[in-house]
Image 1: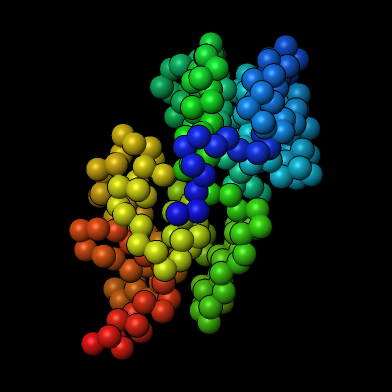
Image 2: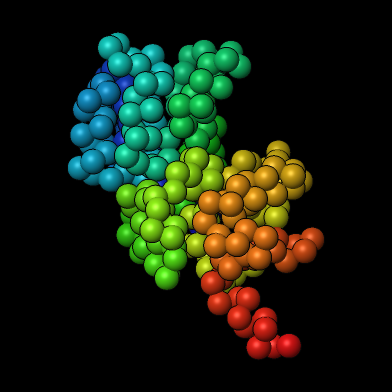
Amino acid sequence: MSVRTAQTLPKKILVVDDDSQIRRALRTILASQGCVVIEARESDEAIEEIRAECPDLVLLDVNMPGTDGIETCRRIRAFSDVAIVMVTVRGEEADKVSALDAGANDYIVKPFGTQELLARIRATARRVPATQGMPPFVSADLSIDFERRRVVSHGKAVHLTRTEFELLKHLVSNQGQLLLYADLLQLLWGPEHADDRELLWFFIGQLRKKIEPQPEHPRYIHTEPSVGYRFDPDYAMAAKLRK
């Protein structure tokens, strides 16, 4: 599967925090692991750096003056699917939910240790495939531009939620390969959801309604009963020829 291994950190990380001491500490930790570290002090600067540098992951502080981290996360999600880990001093469930609803992939609560930080970054990177350089998928009735986050089905633009789009990216980036239920669940929602097949069934159903010419007879997303899914436009035709 075209996902990063468990031991690999993203190459380029943007650290967004108004506290220079925290930025310096995070730069030291991440640079020691071989990461290229970019820094931003506030929301507008973060947006500029993402557009200019295309980082693989963003560490985004929640409590910044002016435009806070939650709103900054929403601004980023308006144009980018870069992996985002929110950093907060508040551990209340409502704050975590707000971060995830704004589009964050994960969160970490201060104070945290170096190993916990690195583990969170690795886990997030595994669940979010890189889209920079990922070629578009184009067929007669479906086109997917991953970098621009644009899906067109039968000539009409299709709106996908963040989760639907990430699921589609995983499927297309492994085109033709069988992806197991448990692997998809862990990649998208973490190991605690490895057995939650109904969650995956729901999102696959939503994707089929939005991109399939006939959702009840899928052309693109095929089910291997009790095993998993594969994205393969030629799979149905090949199955007919085998009969």
